[in-house]
Image (cartoon, rainbow, N blue to C red):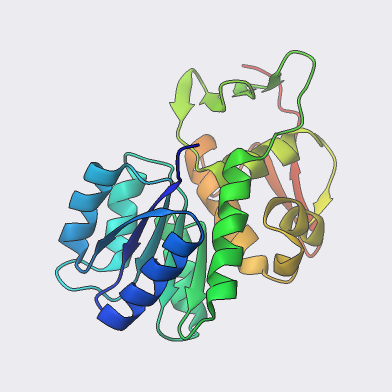
Amino acid sequence: MKKPVALVVDDESNILRFIRANLRASGYEVYSATTGTEALEQFKLANPNVIVLDIMLPEMDGFEVCRRIRNVSDVPIIMITARDDIQDAVEGLNAGADDYITKPFAVEELLARLNAVMRRVKSNIAQTPSDKIKIGNLLIDLAQRQVIINGQTAHLTPTEFKLLTYLANNVDKVVPHEELLVSIWGKEYKDCTHYLRVSIGRLRQKIETDPGNPEYIVTCSGVGYMIRNVKQV
């Protein structure tokens, strides 16, 4: 069985060695980089299944590396921040990261987060009889893991796809924040509302004609979110 490939990017050699050794011991093939520019080069070379990406890097910071990778790939990305700053976390999630972890961290925490993002990639989405969900001009093809809006393909990360599908399977029903967080991210994320807020914002940017005045994904203030059954134009 082929080993999963991880790309680890950090300019601190001791952190890089620590992560690399533990991922190899956990069955990963590991590539590494110490600068933003090298990270993009190694990404093209390695075609990784997951990326562990430090924010503070020489030449190009992790936010910009993440944005550039997101332009061409939906590979899961976990960002590393040196301080427990919610703004760093939100900026990372807005750049397209799937998760983040704060230094210093235990190997068990890193592996748990890696396993969580890998599960979201591999998880079986609840299927409809036709393997497709159609809401207005929004088409979710579950078999192909593809989203088409107004005839154009929307490029979603695995987390965004799972979130959109979960909402679409509950059309015209308000899904509470905690239910979404536990179902999409896991029970350990049930209080991490910023994950949900940022992901909903990114989804709206990708499927709404006017993200500031959303037609599909409606906020039910203080409760949760709902996909409205929009009529096809």
